[in-house]
Amino acid sequence: MSPEIIISCNHLTVAYEDKLALEDVTFDIHRNEFWGILGPNGSGKTTLLKSMLGLVAPVSGSIRVLGVAPANLGPLRDKIGYVPQHSQVDFNFPLQVREMVLLGRCRKMGLGKRAKKEDYEAVDKALERVEMSAFARRQIGRLSGGERQRALIARALALEPEIMLLDEPTAALDVGVTEGFYEWLNHMHSQLHMTLVLVSHDVGVVSQFVSAIACLNKTLVAHGRPAEVLNQESLEQMYGCEVMLFQHGRVPHMVVPSPAHQHEHQHH
Amino acid sequence: MDLLQYAFMQRAILSAAIIGTVCAAIGVYVVLRSMSFIGAGIAHASFAGVSLGFLLGVNPFFTTIVFCVGTAWGIAFLSERRKVHEDSAVGIFFASTMALGILLIGLMKGYNVDLFGYLFGNILAVSSNDLLISLIIAALVIGCIWFFYKEFLLLTFDPEMARVTGLKTKMLNLLMMTLMAVTIVISIKSVGIVLVSALIVTPAASAYLLSTDFKNMMLLAILFGVGSSWMGLLLSVWFNLASGATIVMVATLVFFVCYFMAAHRRRHKFSGRTRS
Ligand SMILES: Nc1ncnc2c1ncn2[C@@H]1O[C@H](COP(=O)(O)OP(=O)(O)OP(=O)(O)O)[C@@H](O)[C@H]1O
Ligand SMILES: [Mg+2]
Image (cartoon, rainbow over all chains, first blue to last red; front, side, top):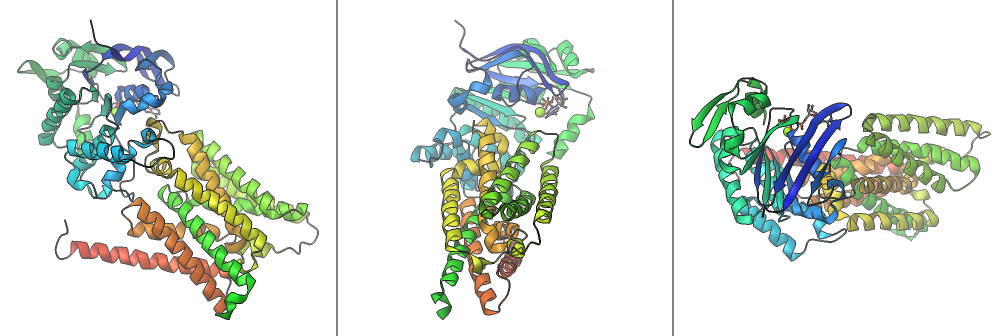
């Protein structure tokens, strides 16, 4: 018996005005799986997560999250934690870390209701998980990029979600910390029994931890177990250029000859 | 202080407290969402409302509330469609409602009404009827802010996350714009069309400089709002100055004091020992 399907894309096609961002994407995510979504810039990774959240609607095909169309999730939204790629928020906002994390539970607390003891407990537990308890009273602007990212993850964790959607959470982290972060994420995954969907550029590192991979380039180029998916052919198809693979343990590492990525990392 | 024996002075003091509170509270959202231009736009829309009220011979309060709330919704509606920038939407309403007001005044035969009073306000001319209306509306506005405290906070801080968590962001946004519009309407009699946006923006902007916490900012803004209104009222009576203008000048002075305090504090933090 295979575990329950949590997210199901069925010929999912998404467009912004007249520009296609995702085309005919079909795959299923099961409970407790840890998915890595890979693809070059502009390949539709963020769009895929936004479709799962109902922030963009499909033009054709369908997507179901927890059995319903994302626009109709209603209270089921409380089961989904989301860590956006570029949080456009103003970090000079007069808000302390603990308050910001609490806002993750805004809907769950109920319209017009104030935070109760259980809400604060969930917040403190989330802060502990990301090792940010010491920063609870800090104004959010007085955090480093990495600490901000952890605070945003805590905001998603505060919901005690069943599904976590993370959009390039390591963009603000330096290389040394990145691997540790994935180890931590993997630990979270096994400890909290969450279904994880992680968008990332770090093909090599990600493939060590995830249970399945989806390679996007507007269309779904390949998906399945890391070892099956990560071969020369599918990677080249995905990145649209030659790639070099390095065998490193069981899973290959690779090099993409594109300066765009280095650029991105410097900016964040 | 035998001035306090006069009923008009008692009304003015009460009115200053009400308006100082409600403008500052709404101002916190206006400042944090960079909506001060919208505030000015809505305020100027009331000019058409006031003119129409005089033309029809009805209490300008009712025509003004129609124009201000209508403008607030119009701006919200136009900028929801991505094709029109919020900024442009405000600019369009700002000018067109002023133009409409001027046309309406032209229709009146030899206007002798106190338009100047509406443009620059006169807190000493607030009637007990005005006071009652503004008290009720202010209570409604503060009640909404109290009830939707965390929803408004999330909508202001991170609108995308507000949508993701499943808040009805369109409705909340419309509600916030409406609250802003009615706040402006009840303040016009006292501080005037031209100056009301200052009373909304300035105390909140001052509070922003000194706050690291939302609740603090809200309380501090209200303190500054009421403080400047009372101080301004007092000075205007003592020195026989225009009340609206004096209140705004006091609020501005408070802002610069806060500005230098914040700058001073920053400098101290970086020189000498580091704080953890
Ligand atoms: N709001 C939008 N309006 C119009 N087009 C958009 C919008 N957001 C994304 N796009 C387009 O849709 C395509 C997919 O974008 P998406 O953000 O999903 O890519 P991505 O894989 O997340 O890229 P990155 O690695 O740079 O984050 C891109 O070509 C982009 O230009
Ligand atoms: Mg993206």
